[in-house]
Image (cartoon, rainbow, N blue to C red; front, side):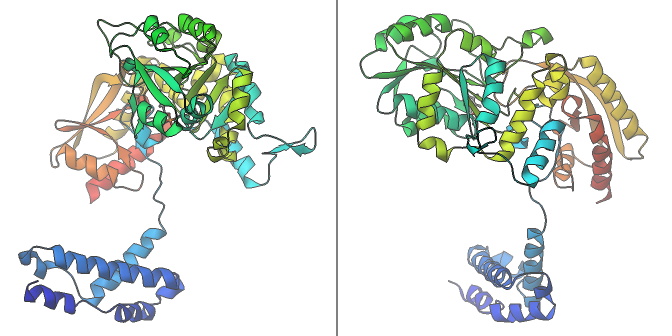
Length: 471
Ligand SMILES: *Cc1c(COP(=O)(O)O)cnc(C)c1O
């Protein structure tokens, strides 16, 4: 190491010295001793590493005096008092945006979380019998009523649901899957990998674009534990394609006494055809075709909290319930409370698309989106936000979250131009304000897609733009 670098290292403030300065400034009035000591250590250690790694010419630019270290420690500790998981405005037009928390909850679900979380609840207590009950019982009969299932079980998310079913029905045995359905969902969920973690052996059949019933039939052997269908959630193969229909597949399973599972991914409970959207089989459709067990998410098209729902035949569900892995994947009371309230909305089909925001966003007529876009535009024009300019655009929103992958949903957007700042810089600044606004960027404009922005969020957009212009 060169001499100048060594000198910089030697001259770094001593931790005790920094701590003394902080103590004098009264830091222990608002911060705990251990956190102060540890933060000092980390800050000084980071500086040490920076000195070692920095280019020679950058060394003199570093702030290495005790006052700078003190200020950085204070800033770091103040950061612990700020919430990091925060509300954002989703102006992207991606309705079920996995990075932005997928489905927003309905007011009833939020109300139930408060009610159940505030005090004690009968989470695992059977009030009628006065004895221990099962947490799933609060929602399983509702799920059965809404899907025609015989029984149901809820776990943490759909990935957990798939893992649990594969492990229960096919551990040490083969699961037959079409090569066209060996999918990856964002966030490292891949069918071959989850299968291997479940202890089941992947038996792939057919080709990427064509898999026939005979391919499944030829693969059946005494080692077969399961026939698995997977919804190709986030892509479509078009052109020269073929897949085995569910009804003959169910018959094949019956003939050989092998259970048939369908990982539906999104798990739609209403008929989307009625809203001019692409056909998506409902959970009821799939179960009535005779599939033994289905799995689907709580926070995709269903519009509720993150959860994985397993529904199907009673004897299969009872095997799954006995699996010790179930205990490791179980959901908490807040999820259950929110899920119950979300599912209840489906009891009134006439109002469910208004009540659940993802369904509302998917099915809202474009004329209503346009009306809201005009309203936002008017508000922005009146807000004295020079030098911004506003234009209306027609474009498309998408469902996102691995749902309805090829569906383009007509939408209306407000484009915002700033002559004094590149759009990419505006986008970045909008991400870093108190209530961040996540936008799309197109050339020299940022775009606010009104399909995912509600009227009661307009104030945040006006305020956010004001903040961005003022600093
Ligand atoms: C989304 C999805 C999953 C994973 O569901 P999570 O709820 O995100 O865990 C699994 N399988 C399919 C087919 C999916 O679409």
